[in-house]
Structure formats: structure tokens, C-alpha cells
Length: 198
Ligand code: ZN
Image (cartoon, helix red, strand yellow):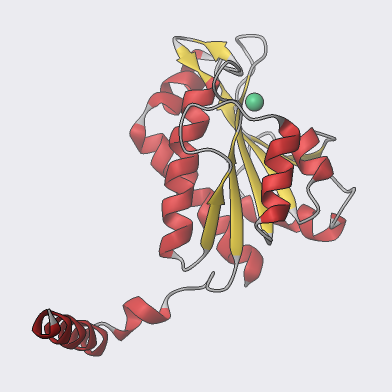
């Protein structure tokens, strides 16, 4: 056991010596980011084109969580499986875990023609900081808007709600379903968090 421990420590040190950059590149070190996958359980959220919003949200939230961890953040997930949580539960969990930032992940629904990504902030708390976060998200074709969605209105840390796309639009739904797009969307969200703290 002792020997195993020693060789493990040795291995770790040689790894640090060879790859110092891997340990330095943790821009979110010391930050706690709360990742909220919208809906869940009995609440499916938007439904369309064979997709349930709650499933898309969870897949992307898991990827965001992974990427934030790679960037050195501590992460707290509102849910990691198909569980129902009230909006009050979600906000309370973020505060309980002293989260520095809250990101709520959703997909939209509307008439079939509507498509694109939207990012919402609420100015009740941390107004200036919340507005800066969606700005960092960048390439949003439907823009950044203010809205009183419960989780971002009542969370007491900077927060945004991202609508990844419209589940009711065939093209958007195809994207939302694809692992490549999910990966890309999660990457954009994690990058936005990093640039928010730069
Ligand atoms: Zn939703």
C-alpha cells in the first residue's frame, strides 16, 4: 500500500513536471458555478419534433458541468437525472452552495417558424454583472433580453437563462438532438463563463 502510494505520488510529480500547462490552465479555479438543467421529472418542458426539453437541457447541462470542471470551477448541478424540482428548490440550492454564478439551461417553444438562441438576464440582483454574462455568450442570433424568469429573478448571484434553440422548429430540433451541437453549445457557455471572469 505504502509502495503504491509512493509510486502514485512519483507519477503525479513527473506528470506535473512534464505538463505544467495542464495545471496552470484553470481560469475558473475558486469559482462555484451552479448549472441548472431546466424542468425534469413530471415537468417535460417544451415538447416537439420527438424531443422533450427536459432531456436536451440535462444532456447539455452535463456537458457544461464537465467543461467548467476542466476549467477549474467547482460546479453544483440542480439535477443530474430526470428529477422534478420546483423553481424555489433550484434557487435555494444555488444559495445553499454559495454559488458565484447561476446558469439555467432551457430550450424554447413557439410557432414552427421561430428559431434561434436567446439569452436572458434579470436585473433584480447583480444587474450589471448579469448583463455582462450573456454578452460574453456572443453569437446569439436572437440576442440578449431582460426577463423575469423565476430562477434568474430570485437567484441572488449573477445569473442567466439560456434558451438553446426552439424544440418546435425542425432545424433547431435536429441540432438540439445532435451530440455535436450539444457539445458546441456547452463549449460556448463554458467559454462565456471563462471570459466573464477575465
Ligand atoms: Zn424551459
